[in-house]
Image 1 (cartoon, rainbow, N blue to C red):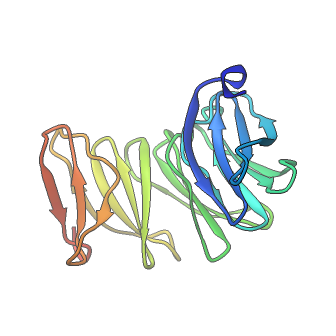
Image 2 (image 1 turned 90 degrees about the vertical axis):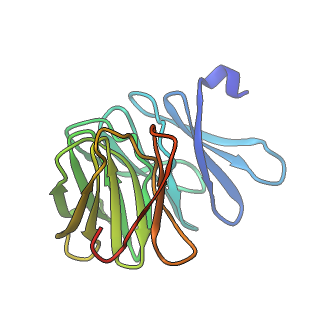
Image 3 (image 1 turned 90 degrees about the horizontal axis):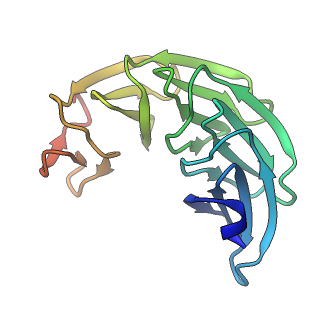
Length: 193
């Protein structure tokens, strides 16, 4: 059935279902059977990994919107407009969904109503987000930017020196580890970048 809907993006799961961007849709598939439960159309491609909890799935689209959909039927609960495509993965924590946009901003949105809590200009399109404790790491085409997830204040920036980095992962010693177009692993100190 996915061939009828379009290109398949990255996915996330909750206890019962898998949520994925497929073409211009956010789709819900049953984990046990693989059957399509619902597909909610958007205005353009959905390429980033959604975030989900038991009641809602949150997804960003190339149409510049962040969507909150009811997990059981795909009904749009709210949507929030940014000024650029939202292709980065979304991050969900403590009633807040974090989204990065090609408008060079990271947004913190209240999950209940989609109201903006804060937005921070990070100077380049956001391609990935990673949350480590209360530190939100925005990966851009030019740098890693650490943001206090509660206040939206930038903590530090580490420029990538013309290397395009992946989304960071937490290393075994508490550092951020990235790979990049230079074909190297790079460790970045969480405290000061």
